[in-house]
Every structure is written in C-alpha cells, then in structure tokens.
Image 1 (cartoon, rainbow, N blue to C red):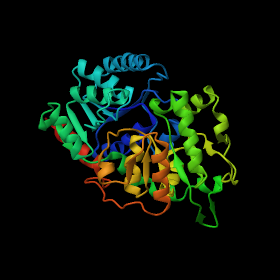
Image 2: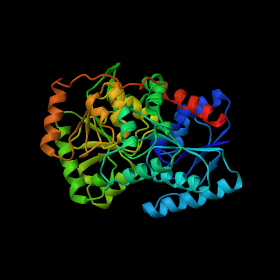
Image 3: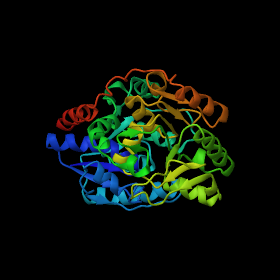
Image 4: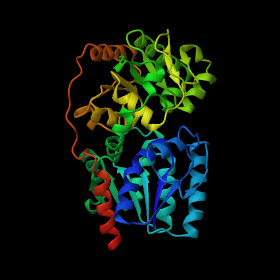
Length: 379
C-alpha cells in the first residue's frame, strides 16, 4: 500500500497525474489529505476539478504557526502509520505537510519518495526552503523536474542512485486540463470576454509571507500594481491568507473586492485592481492561459506560464525554479516599482522574448515516476 500525501492547493495538482498512473498500473494507494488548506475553494474544489477520488484519510489539521501545523500533521500521520504501515509514502512539493510526513515515515522506517525534489532558492529565510532541504535529506527516491535540481542534490551529498530526473508533474496536470479550461465561462462572468473576443488583462497572485505579512511591503505592492492597472486591467484571485492581511492592514481601499462573481457581468472598468475570491483549478487555468501577462510570487505559476508561453513577472528576489528564467518566460522583478513598471511596459509593447520548453516537461512525468516505483517496490 502506498500513501500519497497532499496538504495544500499546489499538492493536489501534483498528485493528480500520479494517482491516474497508479490506477493504470494497478498499484494500491491511499490519498492522505492533511487539511493544511481547509477552505473549500482552496481544497475541495480542486479534487472535483482534477477528477481526484475523495481522500481516503483526512487529517484535518487546519492552520497555525509553522511549528503547530507541522507538529499536528506529524502526530496525526504517525497514528495512521501505526494502524496500517504503508510500503511507501509519496510526498510532493515543499509545504509543512511535506516535511512532516517525510519525517514521520523516515523515523518509522518507511521509504519516502519526494516528487519535485532538489529545487533550491538558496534563501533559508523562506520556510519552504527549509522544508525542501530536510525532506530531500531523508527521502529514498528523489524525483526531479530539471537537471539543475539533480545538481543541487549531488552537491548536498545525495547519491546518484536515489535521484531520478522525470520531469514536471504540474505540467502533466496542465496538459490534461487545458481543454476543460478552454470551456470555462469565467472570463465571460467577469466581463473580459464578449462575442468570443478576450480583452487584454494581467493576472495577479500574491500569497508569500515576504510579500503579504508586512503592511508597508503589501501596501507598496498594491500601489504599484494599481499603476499597472492603469495600463491593463489587473485581475487578482486572492488567496484567503492575503485577503485576511489586506483587511487586517486596512488596505481594502486599494482593491475592488467582488465577493460574488456567479453571474455574468462586466467588472472590467474601475480605478483599482479587481480582487475576487479564490478560484478552482479549471477557472484559474483558463484565466492564466489567456492572460497578456502574469504577476506572481508562486513557484508553480512560473512553470505553468513557461509552458503556456505567457510572460511572467515574479514578485520575489529569488526563485527555486531558475530554469524558468533561462528557458521559460519568467523574469524576477522583486518588489521594485520601477522594474515592475518597466517590465510590464516591455511586455505590453509586445517585446516579450520567446523561450523553449524545458526537457521532460512533456506531460509524461507521472508515467516515469510510476515506472520507477514499480521497479523499486519489486526489490
């Protein structure tokens, strides 16, 4: 029996293609949903959109500090491992659930496979970087998205026989759902599509603590993004945590928050960026695939925009996905207002450079992963 751990929104996109290939191979598995993201729009809708089965086990840990959340996941996951010890635990990404379940497994002598291993920002102030480093040190199988990640792991002393360059499961999911995204009505409901014609817009995501936990930093970012909005409408599906911070810091006047987008109506015009509640995967993919540009602090979106050929401006000082800078459509702009406006202007002037597709980002990563798992479990 394989345990497949998902805790936060990006995890669901990463496990979806693996689940389908496990089914095809006839391997028994259970999906363990830790409940790190417990909002329906951040969790439940993703299982529906991605056609994932209902999780076999739901730990329901909820929110808390990093220590609280990690500790809750460890205690709950250890208990289910005592009840029925799996033959292998698969963890994905770099969230607290990832490192928590990896630690429990390693201490119980259960082999750990880490999907999306070896990514490094080299910034240890990022909680995700600590999670990546620790998980990779105790994993038995390390599945990487790019050759940079292989090099990082070797530099950290991981032996070659544990490293498998398989490609990017996020891209598997993207390819599997592009057709559904084409059929989404989200652009019509927001008034960005009329008579089959899509109006230009920029898509924004913002959730990292470095951007949203300090009032001055968040206020400055919203101000410069409102300047971008003067040149192209900015659409902002807000992470619940970001929405909470905007309200906490009394910055709601810097956005137009539309709570109900269920009806077809034009929300395009207005002074400030348009903030809407979190969207399901299909609706969000539809928005991303048709955007003129994307502004984000998300790692996965840097990868997805690369495959979609959509210019991406990353609102961070570093990235654990440098391949998206070299071979993708990504550009680091940090929180520098001048650089953000300069790069936005370059893109709107149709001066965005074309890039090539990274190796193995071909929609077959999950297939490669399951092939390795079959060989490993036969030993």
